[in-house]
Length: 504
Image 1 (cartoon, rainbow, N blue to C red):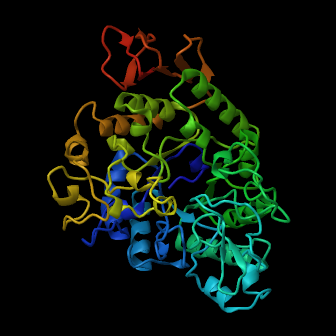
Image 2: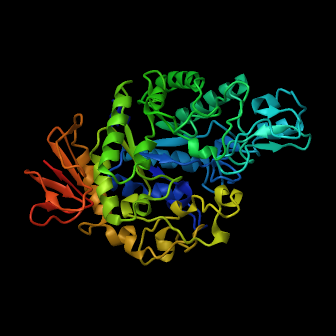
């Protein structure tokens, strides 16, 4: 595979392993099922896949509570299954990125079991963030999943968990923690993985003294205001050490940060030349369907990334956010947004099923929901299960081909019209739009230049590609040239509202 900074322009496809394809019939997606579906991804036109955690885990938080970072959970298969999948992907020129979870472990990790069995002030407890016994928590920090971020142990001490109590935060001032994760990186790099997605990359380091925030509903400040437990300057020292490890391996290995920062410039620090290669651009995902706001977001993100010589990344959906068909409230808008994103310079991240136009599943039965957000909110927040429903592969098969036995760990709605088999080869289907867009995207080069346009229209050019997105209420003229692709049928040389076109 060519290796010259492939990640700068790559199309990377996120696989929520449990919901992608079930190879053994138990209703849970696995590495065997993934391997069998790799030809589909090759034909789709992606350059790499990112796998959500498949490590040993009690699955309190969908595998983001890791009990053993060096083994595959039996739900997903074995290390041999992983190696076979990796070899098959590489044979198809598809790179593989795995998720690393360094902010916290599972409460069932051997280290945490040792910590609970050890005394206050012990070396075992120093690997986590414990604080002495008191009647009240050490500060007012809140869990991202709801409730306070502190839980008491039987001996009265408190331990920090910025997520679920089953996910105790590690103490990154501890040398054991730093050495362990450097070893874990090497373990997977030695097996041949092409990179890492770093979960909660803005976490790990907490402000000295653990000061209170002094504000309720702290999750509302994420990505907007400074927080004492996120985006501390000390994280950058960790990534400089990790970058040296990545650079020591052949084949252009990379890492992408899941990082929330209060400004695009603070986010750009994660992708300085001696740190990580990419950072997710959540500003684009969060932007409303507004020409002014989208243009401002695109400009700010390109400018911030350019300031450190890094590529921008673009994403519309992932395993933590409602699918964008539902967020936008319209398949037409979702199709136009896809062509907008895929025309931008940099790398793109696709979430499994977005190429099928899958909506968020809003009516899951309460007893089927598994997300800790649902449980910790007392059922007031539906959580993230609605974007994690297993994929429909075959319109008329049991479980739509996700599992040969018809089993599915989350119930699927009637997705027969959205299944891969129902869309493949069908002109103007969501799937064919993505397949053609990804094929054409490989030919796009150069920086972005804006054309003058009406207030509610985005119009930009990259080399000989021109992309026009109409967010207004009236049709607009299509620029002169060869129409390469459009999100809707064009009539009379006009681009309807909520539509996009690529012109050469």
